[in-house]
Amino acid sequence: MNLKPAFITFGKILLGIFLFLVVIGIFFITTVDRSPIQEQEFYRETFQDLESLPFSSTQGKVWLAGWGKTNMTPKNSAELVGYSPRGPYEFIQDSSFVKSIVLSNGESEIAWINFELLIVHPFLAQKVEEKIRGEYPNLLRLIFTATHTHSGMGGYMPGPLGEIAFGGFDEDLVEMIADKSLQAVQQAQTSLDTATITFRQANVPELVANRFVKGGPIDPFTRELIFTQHSGKKASILTYSAHATCLSSKFMGLSGDYPFYLMKKMEESDYDLSIYAAGTVGSHRPVSPGRTPEAIQEYASELDSLNRIKMSKFGTIRNPLLASSRLDLKLRDPHLRISDDLRLRPWLFNYLMGETNAHIDFTRIGNTLWIDSSGEISGVFYEKWDQLAKEKGINLIISTFNGGYIGYITPDELYDEHFHEVREMNWYGPGNGRYFDDLITEIIEKASE
Image (cartoon, rainbow, N blue to C red; front, side, top):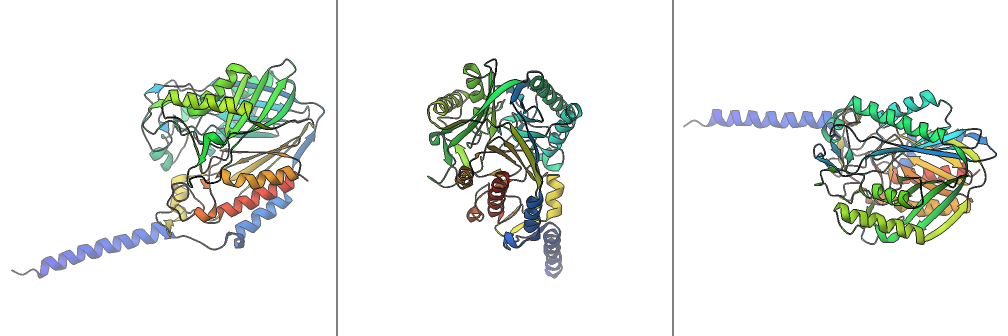
């Protein structure tokens, strides 16, 4: 029996497979760039931009504040977003809201807009901003925030990855969210009244942990701005570093996770409106008693109680100064890794992800600096920044999901660990921890001048 033709055919098949894999590798895969980030041109250019960046600033005589909220729960079931794709929600555990606080000093206005969503995708942010600025074109700053619930609705992220992993894209749903956002801002505008503002901080390490390093460093603080109108009505916007991941990936209901119940608890007692804005949630997990809705309500109730009784800082913001700026970020080429030293080519990443809208907003509210980031920053950096802000005589609040998203910003020493946050979700390569550390340090310096 002559086996030579069979071997030749088999060899051709193997050669074809090999050549196919080579072509795939050449066109779709490249190596990780580990050159020092501080030597990169984009690093120098961004700091040059920051140095010359102007502040839009007004000095008023009095604070005015107003707030509003609208229900943005879809009429029809939408895909759940968070963890991995798991289909449309099967029931409504909690309604989803968009909330707004408008702050004025009589000369200019800023507005916070908050969504019970996983992130604020750039496409959604653009549509919301167009809608709001169409009616309020002179807003000094529109500050986007999200609760980062992992059991919220999708449907607002266009592009291939949005279709695959984030609930597809529903233009009608985006339009509905934009309309509800405008309604919330309209309510806030019509309820504007003279107000006082206080900054409040509480130390709550019991309910958050480092999810990489057992017993590792954390940012344990809640940070809160409290707005009290002349009538006595109050609103609050609060940040905390624990991920909104109490509910499991098997939960099939629409829910705001623990932030929903925390805000509900606060609104049942002291506040006319309460907003939870995800803080530096990178690397941080909640220390919850369980994963059922009942356990999460218990977690939220305990967080509410500890936030009340463990206050570590409190002060009135007397100076009606509003100043704001935006820094567009230049970044290393995308680094979506498939192994320690291999990554998808930038063109493929850009095709899958679409626009990331990388930027940092920063706003001075009297002696308080609010920084809003596109990067999902790890709270382990916060202690250093907080100390610098304290030396400069300012309060520091950092939130994420500002209408851009560029993945996680984690300590560089963890880059080669096999953690989800530092591999699949660290999108712009080694050195980003150093980059953001330097950037925020310089922003604090600049904003305190």
